[in-house]
View (tube, rainbow, N blue to C red):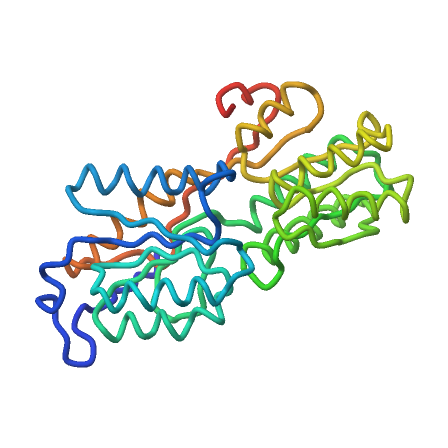
Length: 302
């Protein structure tokens, strides 16, 4: 039986009528859509849902995924403006918990997208990241000899997404007999992913596989391997199924990527907020699904 949650619009004496005139919904993402195909797709889904349902969708994000205070300030501002609902991909779930509680106490429904929050009773809409990372690890296991040295490029580990992907990959790689000799942070960034890979190659020149927790870092790993003339000797698998990653897969540089459904995250996020405003129930977790992108299907994702 699926666990369901219901966020009441009547909290601390406030009712639906308090925000009855407000038809503006906020999507606040961890990072800007410009320059990041994943967040651009989340934004697209939210805006399409808004258009289809004749409501306004405001899309915001901090200038960087590490700028927690900027995101808190954005949420505070939108609460003050009486926004109808908030779909939030938190930069730091613990740090955002207080402002999420503030929204809920004012009768503003909240859902988490992409990254789980810590607030009890708030639904999560996104990928089962641990399962997706295990899929990536299994793919590496099939292409790399047992006993080989492999590495992991982590996202921001204080985020549930970063931790789940790292945990899932480590468990999967260890289970098939590969040696995880390095786990280094790349903070979801291409340049940092490249630098981390360069460090790994220096310390472990015989490495045979790399799991990058997102495609930005995977592209950085590819650059580092290309410079070291080891691109053909190391299997790299990413996560997100971005157009750039798909092109790299078709070019034979990236082995595979675990595709999410970011458009659905944005779309379901806005639709779920509208359901909550009507007093409807949501499942505690709404899984948007994952697909392994390889040469066989990469053309569909570029």
